[in-house]
Image (cartoon, rainbow, N blue to C red):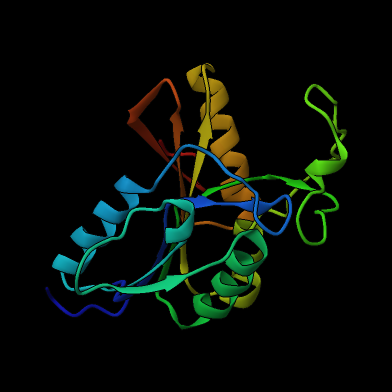
Length: 196
């Protein structure tokens, strides 16, 4: 690899689920385990980048493999904290983790008292939209190359591109990769110039 002034040498990659806590033992997450992000981490490492990989193995995330520095997080709040701590020392930040953006507004302290209820009882749980981590990165790391992902499901191409472009502008990202859950292989890289 040739040394270039703007070559991305140190990269933070996040992958796998980012869970929210419902109580001390229950989590809310999604089905994505981070296999493609772990593969990206291995590929960049193989091509000479120094990769730090942020993930949650206890929530089922895939390990990226030997030779890659891993950092574990313990759920949404810890994930946000660690991204913002690590990002300023990175040339590039790739936020590929599948964040649980619906988080309980008031998680139970300790364990949910299921013994106080009977089967069939309906338990109202208030959720809130989590802060968007990508929006915070440029505040602490204004010079890093920032890449994000936007996953929608069963939408038109135009809607997917519009959603990805909105994040590019709001987060001041280098690019956002948009894809649809109905076809995870097809990806569209959207830049601030509206290039796709």
